[in-house]
Length: 59
Image 1 (cartoon, rainbow, N blue to C red):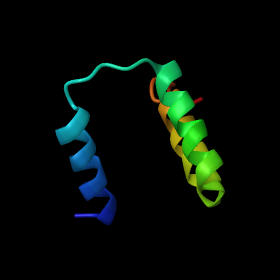
Image 2 (cartoon, rainbow, N blue to C red):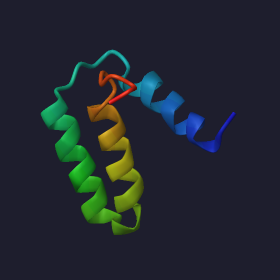
Image 3 (tube, helix red, strand yellow):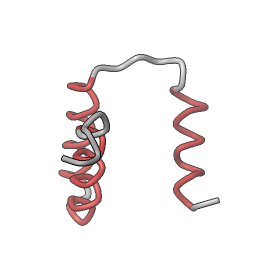
Image 4 (cartoon, rainbow, N blue to C red):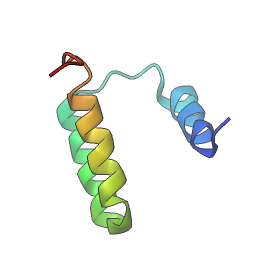
């Protein structure tokens, strides 16, 4: 188990029944980076990965 799994499990446990928009998620991610600028690169990578999930692999 990765250390991040604990945070993901807490998120699922505490907020797993909620439905949120991508716009809401984007705002929370921006807010997080504003408060924690040292995490700008990982958040950018996560956002890009999420945005491209349905892209063809060979593109």
